[in-house]
Length: 270
Image (tube, rainbow, N blue to C red; front, side):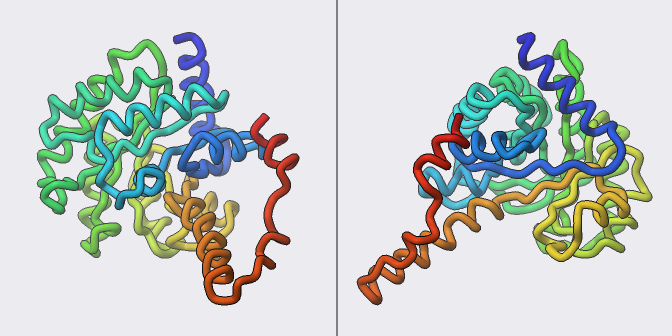
């Protein structure tokens, strides 16, 4: 508990420091340890990355599998971990609160809750979305540590191009008690600035949707936290595909010249 409390305090402080900080998304223990060794101050899980390790599509992971994954990453790293907790694995606010306490017990420092149902494939109605965040925030308030609750507005990511409703939801989520706000799918620095100027809480931006922007530019547009979703996982899959294609099509192994050495990996894994 003392270790987790310290991680929560560190994570909360990162959200109060000037500028923006990077929070890359590992998909397993190995990638988490590598990123930690590189000097990142915090990490976040990726729902799509975890699903990939299980041979499934995003959204097909069970609550128990998510809890096991979060526990494994928290226990094998010394920096804060934020969990992509999808929709809280429930529609009703009461169960979201119960499940939030379950994921908090894994040793992580924060988690995100989205306003999109993976079962019905639709956004929650505004009032229900707010009630879900209120319930999650009430659960967080019972913890004896500054656990960071991130509330996600999924409009833009789910094909609903309504920035006004996105901002309305974010403002309501902030009023409901969320510590951090997040609207994945923002596609320009101008759009990011429009969102961050309408809220007060720290904002998480999903960098791959604005790939040409820098950390400095994201910070100038009002972002506090910069995540990358499943992009690192897919970046790792790309050379796997290329290597496999070379072996099948050409019967050659030139791709082996670009691999990391065993000693390098061993050093990164600690």
